[in-house]
Image (cartoon, rainbow, N blue to C red):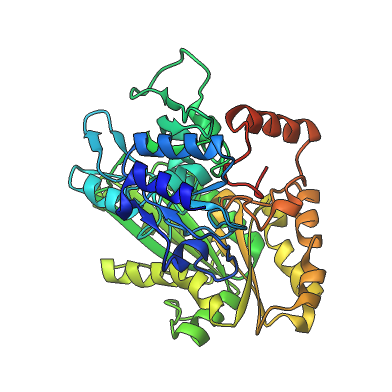
Length: 457
């Protein structure tokens, strides 16, 4: 309504309200989700977010908070005509205690931008994502982003200290949760309610968290392995032999390596073609020590016949070539036409069994069934491609795939969240009492149900 637009312009100025050319805000980057929103708002402060949410709550106007819009489950895309609340301009406040390693910043900062700022101070963010050049820290917290360093630094739960959050109530209440010190055990750890909440409970405008020292030595090695069982044995050995320096343990099967070669002209770094490839990274403070440990690890893998081939990166360029293979995997599968992306976690004994089960089930309807992921924490990215969207293939996959994951002790979402994509299956693996509790929390924080509707809860 025109009166609503005038109210938004009153809060933000005309330059803070966009009605034309908003396609990049109502469509996700994969093109699989598209909403019908007609306006995007660009607040510049917590106070402006508060004014918007108070007005929208009083007038029952649905709102979708949006960071970098890099998600894979449609969580930041309007379903109908919701107002999009973009955090792009809330990116001014930044402070860092380089003795205690505590970061305070606005939620609209891009992850890579924060990493670059911290690097000058001898620190880095404790997680790394393929979308680091466009995803925002507020969205990272709202989705509890994982990434490639979790085996070393843990999840965001290990680093979050405090948040500033605006509630979608009729007052636009501003909450300052947690604190800016590492140890504070004086209350419920309320910031963690919003970690992974997918914009259901409130809008995060500021984040306080710990960063980690930037390593002076980073070593990378690519290993070729003949069986998945031996991949697990290599992981076990890596955890014991590289315990204090291991930072990543990534997995690629032969099918994704072939996809990288055929679709992106990216070739393996190993001389032998192997059923599985493992990318191991260590991060430490002493290059001689770390290279010695990595070399000894590779020698032990060879002597125990755990690997068929292995190469230690001799330069940063060599390491970059290894990582380009892993980081290009999500792009490579899109070149097949249509991609059904899956982000699940499983006990390791079932990790690759899922891939084999889905290959047999999908048969010739699938162009490819490939797997890559974070083997070090049990997170598999199973991708099933086809020339175009195929209803017959979808009927074979769903809900079978998610039911299989839960039946084998896994989670239907390891790091991407629920959003729109997995809402029909969100009860799988969760007790009814837990789902009821989340709905009660939703009603407390968002009594009029205006925030990010039709998703997650």
